[in-house]
View 1 (tube, rainbow, N blue to C red):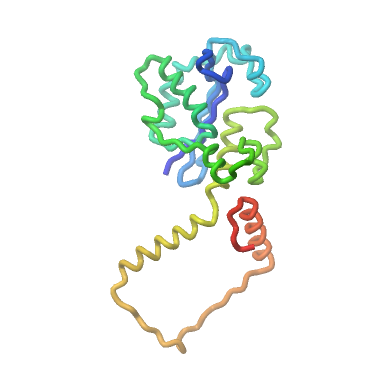
View 2: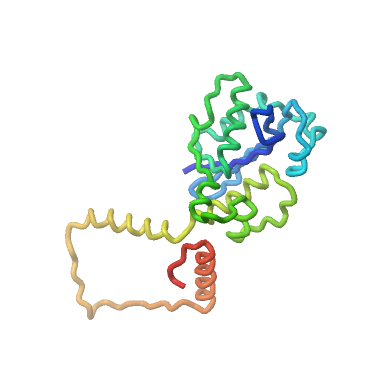
Length: 233
């Protein structure tokens, strides 16, 4: 399964006010493992960046003056995300800006959701942690993801943090037992005979957990408890 963790930075908050994308950061993940393959690009928006936005991400008009326009990078960006499942925090925001850029490029691109699936981690977090703060900083704190080096927002930095948060949010104990259940179900369909072995001929090898392994197990249970998923403490 190929997924792409995606984040953008913009000149402001609303495409209705003519705001544009100025940075895109994407990380590739296959079978829940980051591959090291990524796409990152700063973009000249052809307009001024609002002072409030500069305070958030620190990207200035002067820095973007020699960067490519979105129309120049559209093909390589779309080739990177094509066919993947996009993982985005507050997906409607980023998708609205990306779709607006695709429309403005006049290259007959359809909305990005015609080429990709989407998981909105903000909606996922709201279901898991109803009534709590669920911005990226709050989720990093909740799941023990180190964001101490994040002084300003940045598309690639935030994508790295979101990847860790997403894996933590979706890596609970349930998936492990689902796999076992499916395996047992499939195996039972293939059983054609039962083989009986005399009990006296069975020699069991019992391996007790070491103290170090017990401590690591307890740490894992405490992590699950913080996520609200642990039934064993």
